Every structure is written in structure tokens, then in C-alpha cells.
Amino acid sequence: MVRDHHDRTQMAPYLRLTCTCAVVASSGRANHAIQLPVSHHHQLLSMMHLSSGQFASGSESASRRHGAPREDLGSTPLHFAAAYGRTDELQRLLRSGADPRATDHAGATPLHWAAKATCAAAQREETIWLLTTGNADIDARDGLGDTALHWAVRTGSAVGVQTLVRAGANVRLQNDDEEYALHRVSEIEHPKPGGEIVVTTDEETDKEAAVCLIVGALCSGGADVDARQLKSRTALHEAAERRAVFAVGALLNAGADVHARASDGCTPLHYAVRGIGWYNPPSEMPDKAIASQRASRQICQMLVEAGANPDALDGTGRTPLSYATSPGDLEGVLHVR
Image (cartoon, rainbow, N blue to C red; front, side):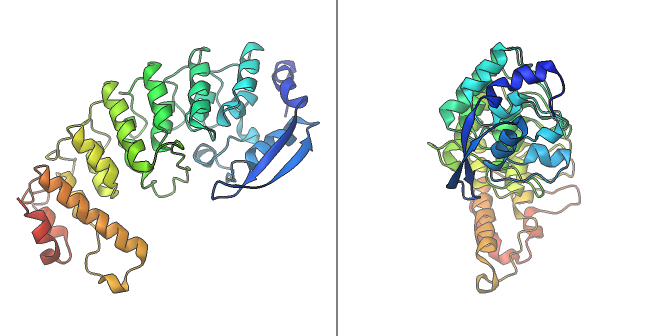
């Protein structure tokens, strides 16, 4: 709904626009296009929403996780321009007085959406730069306390992270779970359950390269590689538990402490072993479970080779090996030193 004259002024470029919107399947490929003369701004906004290939559930948390902002949840035209990397429209809106600090109902600003824009890396970089130089609050937090930097990290946008860090984003800000942006790096490989956000690594990088670039950018920007979140977990704890092989490797290269203890007394090695499900023979396991098992085994080996103590006791007096259902299967990995 256009709420006032100022909003109608902001929408003017869209009302004049005849657009071709690609309807993108979940694979990310355009299946077909629709040529549409836009006579009402909500039609264009709906088409732009369709181009993400994601349909939000209607909740505020879903709005921030899915692939597009939504008008009915308070998104402004500037949010949409930022989300799709439409730099020409974004500049026009900013010149006409659009507020780069406006928030949707989930507390996200246009800069949050720019951090995970569904566009080429160069467009994403320009979009972020236009907003940060156009009076956007670079460290604004959404309803869950996440900054644009948190969003850029969890979607795997190395260009987004690098651009935000160069523009002065504070890498030491925590969200409501006391997570730093660095804690979110493991989500590039394995999103949290219920976190339906789409990973949009830049087209010129694969996930492994993106993870390395992101960890490097955050650490060069002053991030503490061993910073703790709400449960005293480090980013290495998170990566080990989530079987994020690339993140574990990048964090170890950045000097992460393999002896760090979470609030339950566990080291990253405890988390790498716990709940793996080693008791299933490969012939009875689905491919995804086999891949997870291999990743966990690889992470255990990486941690031990980096100096992790396989005999370390957690808060309940248990060693990492004691969490393996079939200890003999892991014993050789955990005692390679």
C-alpha cells in the first residue's frame, strides 16, 4: 500500500517501468520470462518477489530468511532495489529522499538485503557501497540482532563481507545469541535447521574459496577468531559440530584454539565426534549420511593434527572417544599423533 505522498514519490520510477521479470526455479535458472506493463506498484513488487524463487511463509522471521523482502511486511522500494542489486533505481530513490535506514517489520534495513542481494558480485559490491556512502547505518541490527555483516557471512558472499569490512563494519558486534559474524561462517556449508536462507556464494568463487575469503576478511578487520557466543562456543566449536570442513580448515589456518572449552567443558573435538552415528554400516546409510560421517571423520583428523587432545575431559568427565558409538572405528583417527 502506498502510504503517503513521499512513498508515491519513491515509487515513481517503478510506476513508469515496463519490466521483464525472470521466474527463477529453485535451481537458480530462469525458466521463462513475463513481459508486464506495470500500472500498479504492487504488481512489480510481486514480480520481483517471484524472481527470487522463494515464497515467505508470512512470519517476520521467515521474511528475513527467505530470498526476497515483502511489501506486506514493511519493505520499502529501497529494500527491493537493494535486494536485487538494481543500482540505477537505488541511486534514483536515494536522490529522491528515500531513507536508507528504514526498517521492515523484521528490523532489516536495505543494507541487510544488499548484503545478500540476488545479483552478480559486482552489483552487490556497488549496491552495498552506494548505501554505506548514502547514510545507511552500517552496523544496524535487525530484530534478532544480526547486522548486514552477519547476513553477508551466512549467505557466503565474500564480496559482500569484504565490501562491508572495507566500509568500516564492526566485526566484533554480537547478535541476540551473542554470535559474532565469524560464528555464522559454518552456515555456508550447513545452514541451521529452520534457517531457510539461500546461500548465494559469489559466482566466481566456490564454497571453499568463499569460506577462506570470508574468514580472512573478518580476521583482517579485527575479528577475534576465538570469540565466544552465548554458550561460550567459538566459531571452531560451531564448525566442528556442523561438520563444516571448509570452515574448520579456514579457522585453523587463522589460528583458532583447538583447546577452547565451551560452557559444557567440551572442546571442538568433542563436538566433532558427538552424535555422528558411527554404528551404521555404509551399506545401510543414505548418501547424505555417509557424506556427513566422512566429513566428521575428516574434521576429527584435522583437529588432532592441529594439536587437539583426544584425551581431554569435558564437564561430565568424558573424552571425545567416549562419544563414539564404535570407539574402535575412531581410535586410529583420534590417536594419530
